[in-house]
Amino acid sequence: MNLLNRTTDYAVRALIYMAGKAPARVSTSDLDRELHLPRPFMRKTFQILQKAGYLTSLKGKNGGFILQASADKIRLVDLIALFQGPVSMGDCLFKKKLCECVRTCPLRREIKQIETMALSHLRGVTIASLMKG
Amino acid sequence: MNLLNRTTDYAVRALIYMAGKAPARVSTSDLDRELHLPRPFMRKTFQILQKAGYLTSLKGKNGGFILQASADKIRLVDLIALFQGPVSMGDCLFKKKLCECVRTCPLRREIKQIETMALSHLRGVTIASLMKG
DNA sequence: ATGAATGATACCATTGAGGTATCATTCGTC
DNA sequence: GACGAATGATACCTCAATGGTATCATTCAT
Image (cartoon, rainbow over all chains, first blue to last red):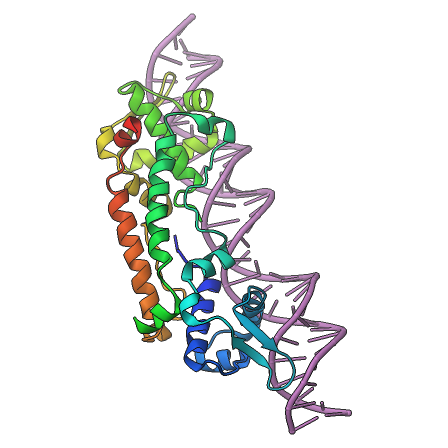
């Protein structure tokens, strides 16, 4: 079980890199060359980041992406949500009807507690905090 | 992202049920009839629990499984490990070589902290504690 | 005009999860 | 002893998600 998938992982690496260069323009070719993040894959990833408002894009020669948000405003928890869906560890896996069952609800409650702890910790992690670390 | 997958979820439900009936014999047909846990699936699941020492099995007519461990000794964290592999949220997703990179290691460190918190909480959760809840 | 970049989208391959099926074996019951 | 119900072992199947690639159109600096 991994908290991050590969897309999120790459996105974080790329954003840390860009934050270090801000406000410079960075193209997916740069990312491929400098961080060895596969270009076709990052193109897709960056389009998502752009639509989400983290980046602006410039087309054409010398185009690329510019970091829009400030590093301390980019939270890891939001990136996870963006690429993997909201952090939720306790979605019930059983047929809805039976989940009313008194016996099994404590299970969800425990998991919910863990989720809450994880989330509150995650919310404090930003691109900026990762750069300092 | 779910902390438990369906197999683990079903196993927990079944074990709670068995603990309530202990030391009675329970067959996968019973589980299907009483909890609506699909029999073929539970057969596979229970073989794993048996090999892990949680259950003993009786073959033949009137056969089934008997809960071997006491409910307060069956920890959720161990069931997760059994069916999903050890809880580890921060396996590196990048090519090993580059993971030495100073910049990205803080990411792993944060995730490791979350993992540690989650694990310490999880370790306290047992079949017995879930029955009380 | 050309080349390098993104926008949009479709496509592909691999893997894992969830679930089923089969055959052999065991054992209680008639 | 025959039969039925159960497990032991194992192979198989299907589907969705993930990771990754390819293509064509468009934009823009030179």
